[in-house]
Image (tube, rainbow, N blue to C red; front, side):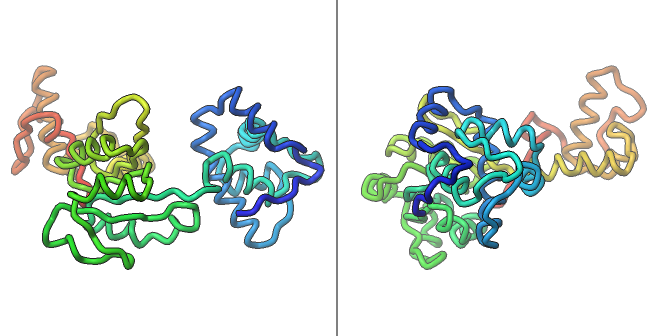
Length: 285
């Protein structure tokens, strides 16, 4: 993306603004919102909208306008009263701050259903991320193709990371294999990992991990749906509709609390054998 000329409403020295924001440090919460602003700004840019007010942009991004103005102050952008923000310049500013003005090679490890879907996701390339390689250990998968790329064997991981200058790895393996894959990625030189496996990864200092667990997001939505319906979370009627492991866990807690008429596990509920069984989260591999 080329660098647009700053308008009169923006800081005249973008380099100085960046140095200032770096010196202050940008809060993680602000960093997490920058992609939301960029998505909304990109949509405005595609419609050739030249300027946008903080209220309009905040509504498009789904945030509070005061929070948006505070976030942009970390970038050195304050807009102009009655005019708003220059859309193209903000696209450049945020893209630069997020590191999207350069190419980022990415490897995806674990080419099951989810790995295939991510490989075919067109949003990677348009946002500066290039899928450099697809890797798997299953001989039935190695040699196949996804998104026009061959699936290569895990034995090639280290060579690919070095030769392609990969610093970002995406893990879509089953949970049991995720930590081993993570360790190999880190040892090969990868310093940022996006983890889709339903497990917590242990990494050394200097390595960033972002976890995406679709089952957790669905459970949060289920919580809100339950509240909308007015159901009591601990009621027997709710537990009767819950999955077997959840019913077994509830019975276990009741026994520990002193029993009660519903202290025994529900009929046909599998026995709870530990925390992982009680709170299992299933993700597609």
